[in-house]
Length: 63
Image (cartoon, rainbow, N blue to C red; front, side):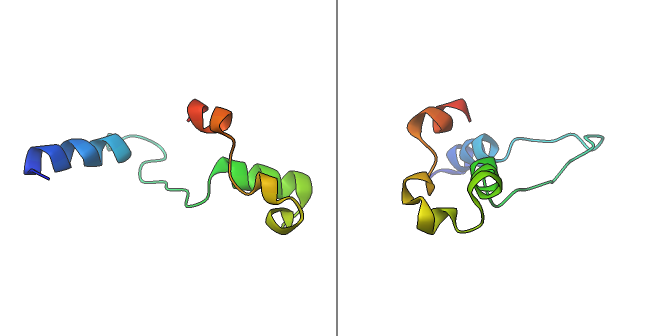
């Protein structure tokens, strides 16, 4: 990948956040989907509800 393409790809994944942004640099390693399913179905939801282990295509389309 060329340098300009790598910069563009990085900005797609990690958009620039101005220095005065209140939550600058805040990174979530788990998706909101995980936390919602954990809250609704409990921390064992991937075992007890394997169909919910990954977000649906409709949910992913929203992000």
